[in-house]
Image 1 (spheres, one colour):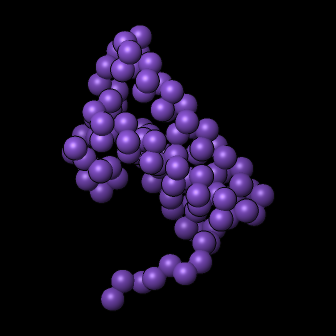
Image 2 (cartoon, rainbow, N blue to C red):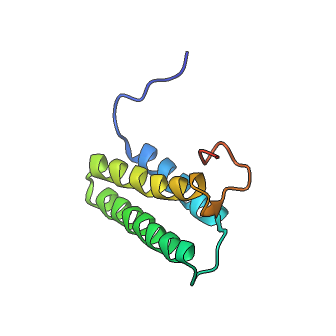
Image 3 (cartoon, helix red, strand yellow):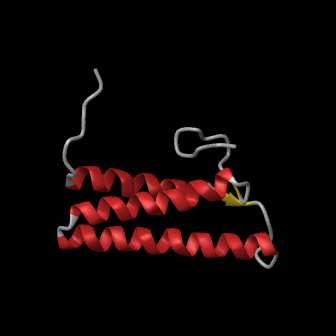
Length: 99
């Protein structure tokens, strides 16, 4: 039986922050920065980076619920960029929802 998470812990937050950092580093742009797609991607990654930063700040403040929400939003922005074809997830279906 799979272990159930019934509370948000600091360890859980750190796990997802690390996973999101790996996703951010692994996914690579598929369009030039100055193309319409590249500009859209830049906005998406700005959102991902902002939410990841917020997650770390909330975690430092001891607000684990908001940290958990923020890091999941961060990862979702990256995952979305891969899913819609703005970034290459390099076949990693454990970190990304591949097309």
